[in-house]
Image 1 (cartoon, rainbow, N blue to C red):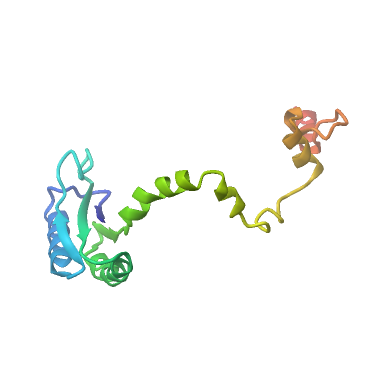
Image 2 (cartoon, helix red, strand yellow):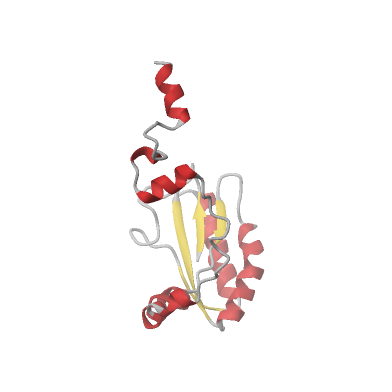
Length: 156
């Protein structure tokens, strides 16, 4: 998907239209792209007209599309001007579609895949521990307010 955006121009402006046409033409010319869906009002054009999305369908495998996106991003970004910005946003739809199904299939077994070292650097100060135990305002258990709170109260 390619996002065309301008804070000042809209889809009705000639420079914006030119960017959309150039993006569509470039995507249609690429063998990795099977289809191109131009921006449609109410669907892929923002209400204010400052953002439009050109969608492209894959004609290659996931790896092929990653390579195609890598080669296309420079060409497409080249259509940007001082007033209009063009950016390729590569979304692997299969990943977004299949991920929930895979996670639900794995269920609690996902936790067994956790990396043991990930949480080794967590902050373990007394105040943090108190908050984790549920003490109000992160008090350390002595009943005294944290020092920064005491200072701010003495100024008022």
